[in-house]
Length: 214
Image (cartoon, rainbow, N blue to C red; front, side, top):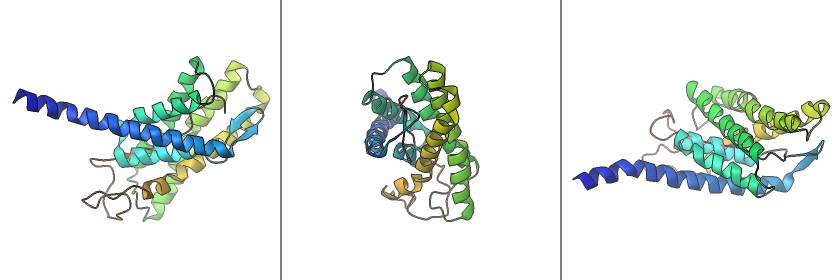
């Protein structure tokens, strides 16, 4: 009996760990894909759209906040594929994880629906998830470059705008990321279109590029 209880106790942790690894893999793959269209603004690498942000937000909306470690791990792997990780990497990973989490929490607060059946859902995604939450990652990322001396203060806003726009576009693509997920047996998947809140037993998440060399 004790063995059964222990198994049941660790099953949620095992499931969360496996889902986080899957999110990390998707985030990394989206990051490598997004880097194919990278641009250099004032010596900093940015992307017109950062797909990992959409993946992160979608993952949080579909699977819940429990998969945030996968976003952080995916962000770290993208950075490690571009440069040698350092102390500044921690700041970048934290900000790239915090931004999608903030978007997720704001959308949950206003009752966002994954089926995007209402006008308010689209507006919430753009203004709260995109314009609002992505201020975290762009400000922290570009601010880090200025603080370390790799970017002149006069170039802050040009780089900040490009970074923020890329993250915002990535966040707004999260419904498309959700559309590739398979509806659950109970019909509550994001493509099912049921009039039901997606914030129950299985929320979801989406995330952005955590690279300090952007």
